[in-house]
Image 1: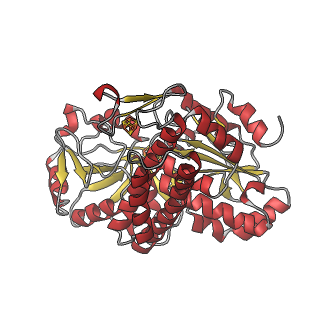
Image 2 (image 1 turned 90 degrees about the vertical axis):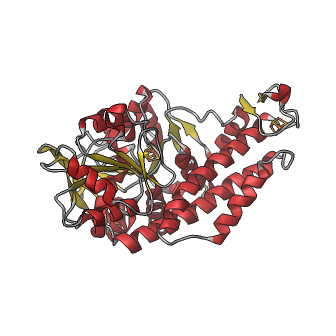
Image 3 (image 1 turned 180 degrees about the vertical axis):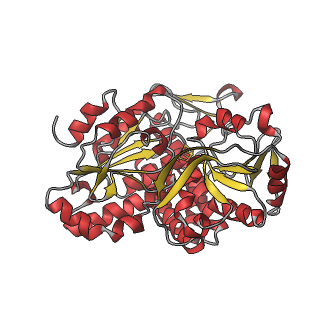
Length: 435
Ligand code: SF4
Ligand code: SF4
């Protein structure tokens, strides 16, 4: 069931409830409404990536034109047809692939070629700033503003992969990583004594206890926080210098930086190992994270993957699965952190290149994708995978509420889209053809 209230003729001047039994006043049915919402959410997610890319100097007029046309499709009395709306939904996936590629290339051009990097976790003695969100350019500019000061900068949440880019990693003020995924901000930011910079989505409304030292950039804002405008990052540095210092509390170390270029540098050895039976399977387990208990499905799944398989991860879903000890395979960690959610592009590149090497399709590879979703960037990534014809993806922890039963049936029939069950081990056995 969905409510639409976007036009004047909305029922009773309130909203049109659209269900399997009821249509909108205009005649829009449940499946068209579902696909229009899917398209809108995909456009939102793609726009987030496109905004990052534009800040780095990359844009694409074809993508911009598509956004306008696709929004137009969702207006009142433009399109009541399931097949054409589905066509636009999948085209959104194609456009998002272009955007993710553009963003990946812009990241590498500005931040340097990624390489595995060891990251200290926790805090070190001295004034500190923690940076959350996804925007690497904000981090770069903040680091420039810190130069010559004793301020130590820590990544938080999805900023962790920043350490794989040499132009960021080598910066003397980038000290390490603090904290876990976005949903732990309230507790973690409360405990962090320094300044906080939120660069993108996945912020939690700051508590009063730290709102006065909470800064935002761009479209991000929150009550009590300060929006940094005109590149005045020095304001945050001055605040950090005036606040109590962080304690020396290193909690561990981790290795990040298995960008697609790093993995593909070893493609020959990986292909040989698969042919020799030394690698049984690849799993991509990642995406978003959230607070629901059902998300333990993903940690259970990753822990149960056989010891001769690699587990690729990305997005903040990594925080849920990385506490397990996976060991190594062929001299590499079995759990390979490919980066942020937008680095799903990298997973696609690896899959396509492996398929080329084996002279098969991506769907014929020993590869299983288990994706956790939370918000609209994950929707855009899913649409990209569907546009590419990837089948058998498992999605969880809950089905998207905006996908009607009719639309889900279409996606199941055409793409074998699956929902995360309650038994991760059983789903894994099925994925490996042992159930
Ligand atoms: S667009 Fe259709 S479903 Fe939406 S409010 Fe208008 S009449 Fe109702
Ligand atoms: S992966 Fe998704 S949920 Fe996690 S921080 Fe990024 S956008 Fe938010």
